[in-house]
Length: 133
Image 1 (cartoon, one colour):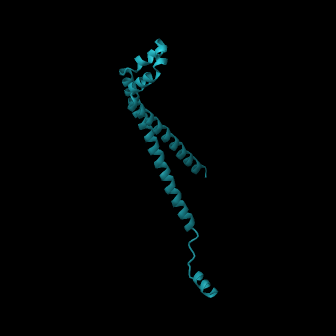
Image 2 (cartoon, helix red, strand yellow):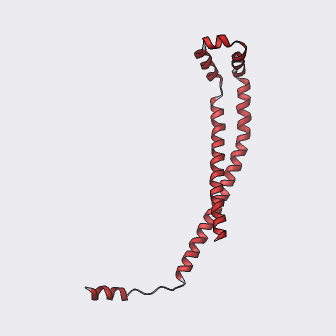
Image 3 (tube, rainbow, N blue to C red):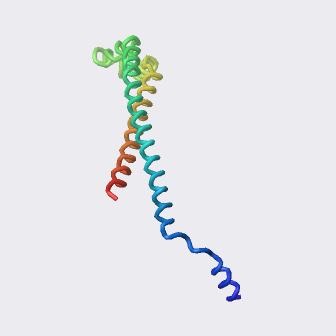
């Protein structure tokens, strides 16, 4: 048995000593290229999300001003006794006048922006670490 295992081990050729360095260098190049591509994509995504956030915020503010939200909200300060008596109807009226879709889109764009900035900073840290090594 030992003879056969020794014979099998002796048939394995010895690799070139520089092969390990070549393979690790190639893996490092591929990882570096992937990180740079991610940095580019996340920077582009953050710029696009900011560019989309501006018109969406304007749209939400315009729809908020066109709705009767401000009129209902001003009742809170002018006739608070009636508000406290009929608070359920008042809360429902306030909720119905809010432009929910536009507010949700603005919040979605903010979340996309923050996530892209987070991923961008993580990838920039990776680039900085590889330069230090």
